[in-house]
Every structure is written in structure tokens, then in C-alpha cells.
Image 1: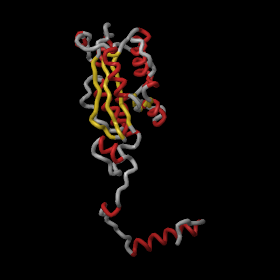
Image 2: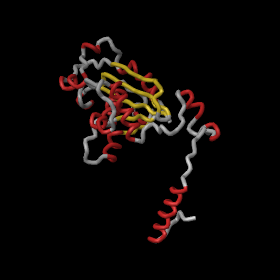
Image 3: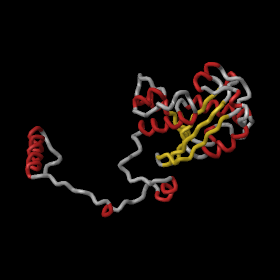
Image 4: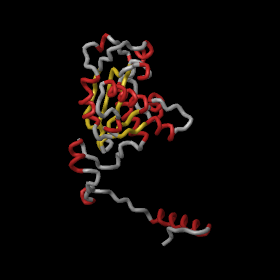
Length: 232
């Protein structure tokens, strides 16, 4: 399973007001493990940045002057996310901006759904924690994800935090499984790889006579109370 955790920073709150993407950060997961592959770009929006937005991400228009426009990086971005499931917090926001940029350049496939599936972690968090705050900051605190490096919002660091939050929300990284160490191993082995039991060297601790007697007494109390499916 290939997933891309994605985040963007923008010049303002709405593409309907002409706002543009200025930064994209993506982190690749395969079988719920970070592979080390990332996609990160700063983008020249060719317009001013709202003061409120600049206070959030700390990126000025002047800093973006030498960076490519979205149309110049669109193909490499779409190639990176192709066929994956995008994991995005408040997906309507990021997907809306991405599709706005693709429409501006008159791309032949301007819908993100034509390139990848989308999982909205904000929707997932609201289902899991109704009535609670479910911002990325709140989820980091709830799931003990260290966000101390995040002095301002940034697409790549937010994607990294979201990856950790998503894995924690959906059951961690299945640490009890013997997982491959690299993405290449994951492809080679696959999720259905068989682990030989004679290679595990498991330690078996058997119940003592007292523990067995206590267990039988407990089952008897269950039987006396009605029925017990676990009696011999």
C-alpha cells in the first residue's frame, strides 16, 4: 500500500480569491512505513502573500522570487503522487488549491481524483473524537507526537507530523509484525510473507499447578452462574 502524506502552504485562504500555492511537502509511506522518499518544493505564486498567511508560515514573496512556478513543477508532482492514496488534513483545502493550480495551467487532467485517491484525516479525527478539537496541533498533543520543531507552519514538517499522527490514529505502525527494513524489501516480501515459527525461538511459560487450579475454579463459577463455553 503506497500512501503520500501531503501538505501545502498558500498565499491566503481561498483560491476563489486568487490565492496560490507557495509550498508543497510530501512524504511517502509504503505498508505504513516511511520510505525516506520526499517531495518538497517552494513555488513562486506571482502575487502578494496575505499578512495573516505570512504570519502563519513565515514565507515572504521576496523569498520565492527565484523559485519555479506551479506549472513548471506540476508534472513531477503528479508523477510522485500517481496511483497513491493521499493522506491530507482538511483535504478540501489542499485539493481545492491543487485543482485550482491545474485549472490555471489548463492541465488535461485537472482533478486530483484522476491521479490519486484522497483520505482526509480531519474527517477521520472528527469521527474518532466528536466534539473535540481536531487541528493538527491538537492531534499532536493527543497522540504525544513531538511538534517542538514546528515554530511556524511548513509544508514538509507538517506532512511529517501528520504522518506520525495518522499512524498513531490508525493503530501505530503494527510493531508486533516483523516488517521489512526498506521500501524495496517491502515490495519484495509483500504483506503476505511467511515467517517460519522454528526461526522465532519463542519462550513458552506454562501455567503452574496453582494457576491451573485457580483457572478451573473460575470456570466453575462461570458454569454455576449460567454457562461456560471454555469448560473441558
